[in-house]
Length: 523
Image (cartoon, rainbow, N blue to C red; front, top):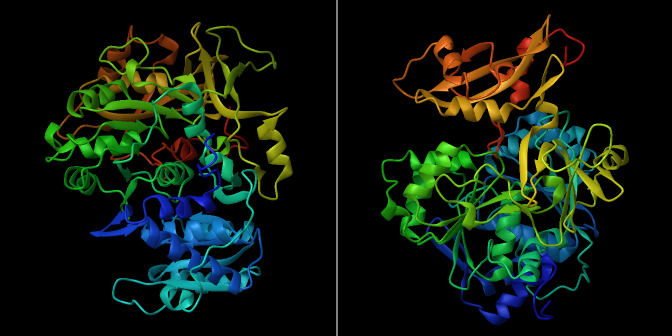
């Protein structure tokens, strides 16, 4: 590695403050913040954190929508040796309480609209000492600004190492209560380093790039993307929250060149009337991930958006991408469009069967990875950490297989697998087949109890506007497309599918009413 290249988050802003002080680091709602300004203000906030009595390793939460201040605070945490705990503002009060209590958060930065919620929760949060109100545009001089005023803007020396904790990100909680994955500095640099080691430009940043942070930085995928952009010294275009119309406008007017999105975001952008090829003319690269993408949507993206596409596969616990599907595989009708990708340089992927052996080529099993970006562990949960990481291998919780060339193909989440009379049915395969019907906008497939077969396949279907179709018509359309035992025996039509903030379908919510009153979620 080049010795001058930062390898911990605390070193990023100082490096670019020296190399390109006036280059915009952040563009947010019409205002740009240069790297020198970001460095000085994050220094000031870091001094204020230490002045508040926080010690190294103390947890600092952020509760609010995205803004330039969020990234200033993120760097301030790194510079003070404290650990950032991003809190999704869409969560309910009990969910917020769980994160603040579980993380032993000592200080919370909160936007005004969440202060009442914090006031109600605070008596039960013994570790919480300080709440700092974030300024609104109309309240400069109060709250956050006043809190850091008077503190130095000089550099701090924390002597951080790549293995030190810098963030604690809570899992989306698709099963059980969310757990705090403790992330080290090294996780944020692993992908860029692996690309350099492999001589690859599948995921890259160039000096003049303007990177749109579409996936929220309050989740590890978005935070990872933004920090890679900051590390490269590019301009990061920040949205308070993702809106398809606003994203299309920003890409066009701000000259966005690269972004990382979830497939649902691509769908929302392409559904906008302003989404023409000209609107996306500045884009050179689109990285997508966080949930599966349908072949129909990907084909539409390739037709409208004239950019290189790269699929990234990861998980919060993995710390960074573990596999990538390169641009060269993204061609209409390409043989590997359904693949997840190849392991990143320095990352190992293997498939493990239910009986613990390594699967043969083409044989499905659980995906396990060994990656230098892996989390340090779950906060205060050694049992869950030991179950997730065995002998250095992270169990991803996904079912998949490797082909003869090492390409990874995912079948589904292990826990989402439906077992019909002893045969595994992977929902994604059925959902893709349903998505090819012209009346279907999207579908989610779940297992429901069946007295004869143990489980039966049920499809929750969202229809395209103005379209009608019967369950029988859908069933007949699947004949010959997938094996008979995979074809849903029942169908329900819904207006929308429940999703978590990163766009993943919450099949557990769809299953609840079918399994209510049963001891377990399997028959």
